[in-house]
Length: 271
Image (cartoon, rainbow, N blue to C red; front, side, top):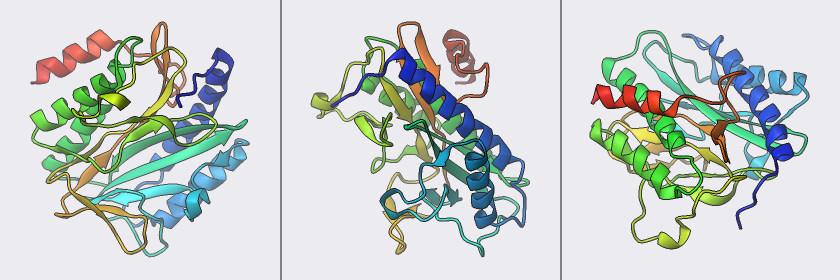
């Protein structure tokens, strides 16, 4: 069941999103060669709690940490580790969530560590573009598949693949609510291709691979990796559907709305 949010509820989720985004920026300041993913996790936990929020991931289905720290071929759900230290040339996906006044915010970024390869740089750029192209389809009357198609088309036209085993989701008083938001078009599943309505809040999260879209879970029962061990990138925002267009609840202050036509034109000119 899709739960529509009131303007007041969306306002609370925006407050949660601001904490989440500020935490991402704090983590970014500490990403460098030699830092451990455990250190980044502690920075995130302390930051969220200092703002009065609660880390959304810690304890969720038994997950042991505040952030997902996924390096290179790790797609998502990488568990922070004292002995896992960043190296020059790595890319690291940081996924984190905040609970604020009973509501959730969820977002992810992928960061470069030092000098990365041109292929990795392109992967990160295209994945971030996929996210914003998906957000540009968050208009009343569109369907979930419009988001999915925008992400898939841009990723595949740039020579990358879209993870099939993991998808975006609705969000609110729970981390995962209806509807599911795939990053690819499920042509035989029109029954779940919901129409977008004002009051819906969804987490859009392209997970894009340099090689095959095939993934597997490691023995820790959490970390998802590409089966060919080629790099993957991940970006995510929590987005509200409104009568005036999409509002990015996990954006920085003043950046919750963006010029959809201008962004689409920039992407179009790159093709």
